[in-house]
Length: 293
Image (cartoon, rainbow, N blue to C red; front, side, top):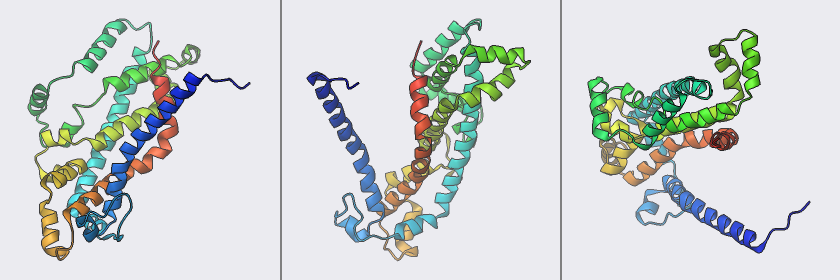
């Protein structure tokens, strides 16, 4: 049966669609400009002829970035941090969320209030830095992993999702002799694929895009992450590697701005490739996990 919509509802939908289209364009157009600039020639960039489509297409800057050892070293460091940190995040979130999803857990309310408190009032920068320093994690990969080992927001999403699983499943599993550990890894996790994918994406993208923590805790150039590498590339306008390239290896033909754009495109590509495969589970997990009792 077709539901007749009022004029007010149609106007509201039209307003929402228009607003979303404008916001999408505002988010998409700068990215398109960077992609177009990364494939355009130096002359086109110098003369500001690049908008949202490559002008005088070339792959020269990509060839230089791909041949740069610093880029791959920073990329490998980022991959290691993302894999180790995300694995730790997922394990701690699942292990912490399962007992807190059970209403019979003693002290559950107090623990939840404490978690929400940390969500609202986060530790200031200087005490956090001093804790990391006293733990001797400065200039270590673990400085990027340990302080963010678990997210209160993601944990609340996971707890909410676990609460929606039928309690009869757990009762049947316990009758069959399964302990809580086997229930979590053999029943809860396989049934929670949407929230698992959502949390995986939240954590992985967060670690991949993180640049402030590396700036605080990493001073060794050989330990810098990809985002840190790009930050210095953009902030300085011309890193030592690029200066060398401009002065020597490339015969002065490379423009730092083109190299910055090519590096940004290469650093963003893995996330852009990964997201479409997880998008379906991401939407489902985020919406189901956000429903509160």
